[in-house]
Image (cartoon, rainbow, N blue to C red):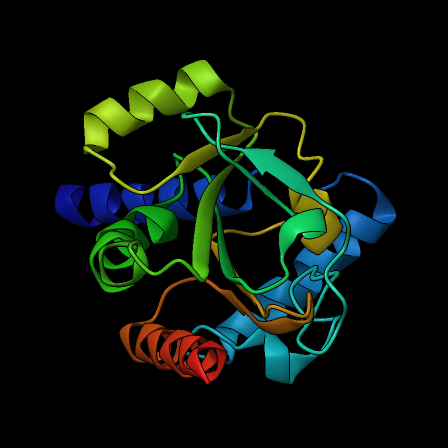
Length: 206
């Protein structure tokens, strides 16, 4: 019983880390309720591109023009909506205390960053929801993160794409249109994202 209790506690902490900061307003509570209801009937992480903007507190979906944003990583490199022309852009929104985010990290590093980092038509930023630059430097050292980390301490960028829940992967095409917006982590869904990035980059070679 003690082991079971500890397992349940760990699971609860992981979920809270991914959903922390859900608005306490009636709108936020309603969105959280919708998300919990949807998740209880769906074993796999949903593809927001197919689900619509009313699912899981999402504000920007596939087919939308990306909202105006700008993030600067720890090395001073900026990814912004003003400089998307000719680039395929991947934004990975995360929280350091989120269990789903931590599960996703090794795959973001190996399957996306290491694979595409040398392509001049690809850019990426891991946007730390609620995190300062100092916190991300500590996280980078602790987890040996190699891909770009960008602080978003006041959620100014995050809130343009979503109200709550992490991780979120937003893939943006060179025309500034969102190609996909995926929440949580699933290996098969990540494979689809990688294939889509490759396909979009191949278009730019023509």
